[in-house]
Image (tube, rainbow, N blue to C red; front, side, top):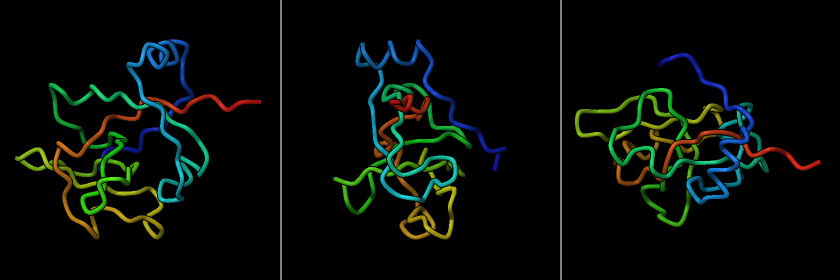
Length: 122
C-alpha cells in the first residue's frame, strides 16, 4: 500500500465548497480509522471525485456497506481491480469491519473521497 496520507483540517476553500454544497459533511462514529480519525470528528467528502476516474490506492473514501446500504463506512483504498471494484481497509485493523470480511466494494458504492477534517468548534 502507498504511504499513509494524513487528513488535513479543512481550508477556507474546502469550507467554501461545503457551503456551496460541493462537499458533504459526515461524522465519524467508530474506531476503525483510529488514530487517523476519531469518533465524533467530522469530515468533508467530495461526492463528485469519482465521476470521471476510479479511486486510487491510498485514497480515503466514504462507501456504502455492501450488506447494509443505510450504513456508510470511512476506509482507505488498498487495491482497485480491473473492474474498478475497491478493496477497502480500516486503519485500526483489529477494530475494523472492512473488505477482509465483506470483500470488494463496487465503485458505484463509493460515495466520495475524504478531502479534509471539519474544523473542531471551540
